[in-house]
Length: 306
Ligand code: UTP
Image 1 (cartoon, rainbow, N blue to C red):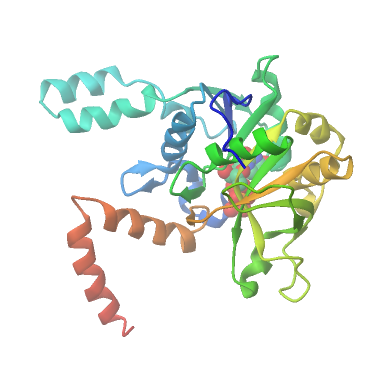
Image 2 (image 1 turned 90 degrees about the vertical axis):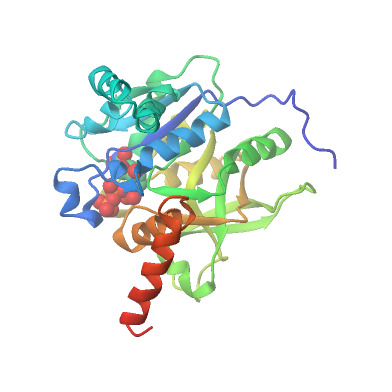
């Protein structure tokens, strides 16, 4: 099969970044600090996601925020006084770091008054879309999918197969109980990626009853039809409006939904158990901190008798 041409039809203008959750798994830090601003080494998770959106060529970041989480948007402002001070002191490297976020795709705030679920959060973003946008990407800011660039591949799959494309990971069978698991069948696709057709999804099944080992992760390329589906779902698991329920509704109605199985790694920044390894991973790769961190980590591991 030939690769999709560069004149492909899908151009993602808007990346929706839901950041209005309560972050309860990260209390007490999230009493006052939004979890999306917790630093991975020195850069907040949401800035890493904004960079990924810029790499995709998106021009708008629709950030879903809660009334008490305005700092998330403030991170993308410019800071003239700080910039002037750093400039005057010749701190060019720090100046570049301060400016980086304000040079990324323009963020638009979409307020979610109450955390009624990811589906509800995503649905609110329809208000900021242009009429000609027939597709959106959703990137969860607490989920790092590495190497970046997976949504570009999902765009290629949509160009080939239409509909919506979700990112999946293949996990060991014993780990599936933690995730939304895809029920899949072979796709009519002979391209270079691992692509499956989605029949349905099961939330957090037992390892024995799971329909596959392909699990959902925080990257979605969604046809605009998702917004209509989101208006028609009712609260699901946890009393929240679930994005996966709207996807399930689309599938029922014959809308094509595929997964692209990502060959890489991910870090779940949404809880300390995933956040700590992410910081270690990025720290080890960091030219300034890496060598020292490696040495110290060895000592710490030895001290803990591992
Ligand atoms: P999570 O379930 O991981 O985030 O939602 P949470 O609800 O903040 O986490 P816990 O369970 O309380 O620890 C995934 C993403 O969706 C956003 C979150 O901010 C997170 O980035 N979200 C979730 C919303 O924007 N609104 C919601 O109503 C729920």
